[in-house]
Image 1 (cartoon, rainbow, N blue to C red):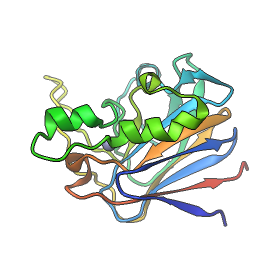
Image 2 (spheres, protein in one colour):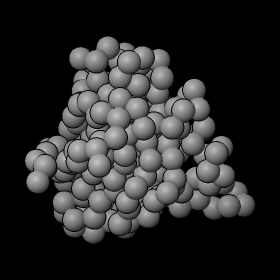
Image 3 (cartoon, rainbow, N blue to C red):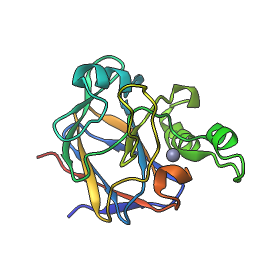
Image 4 (cartoon, helix red, strand yellow):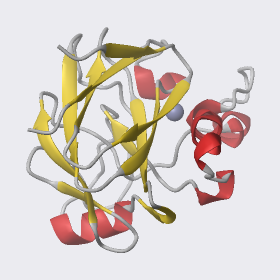
Length: 198
Ligand SMILES: [Zn+2]
């Protein structure tokens, strides 16, 4: 049994994930988003790319069987299990400016962006290198005609998970999201565990 780690509400974590290992991201209480970002551990200029991943999947909602690609079109993660089936890969990590622009009546917070920047700083990742993250459990339905989207509460229930197998050695940033609308109005923890290569 591998240890399950807990990320406190509105915070983040940085860690390594070796090729072949599986990262399981768990929503322990339900309706909580976790932003996931990965970099090539041997060359942090290679990073997760939403655009490449959409190009090759020909869809914007990714789930079990889909691959997440880098800016160099290499597979970084394989989604091997998903009990929810709805995640977002369009929107950027919430940030100080998200709060300034979208939540003007609430105290600002550094958000997932600031939490990712802090978690990834020991690995040499500078804030300006942080792209759109894979937003586990985030529920962003898009109108297919107009392209207009809404941020709705996640459909994840307590104990739901999504699991990713690493296709290369990775540095990972993972958060418990800080933006109210993304998380059904309250801030909860996120849990994760790393399962060894089969
Ligand atoms: Zn966030």
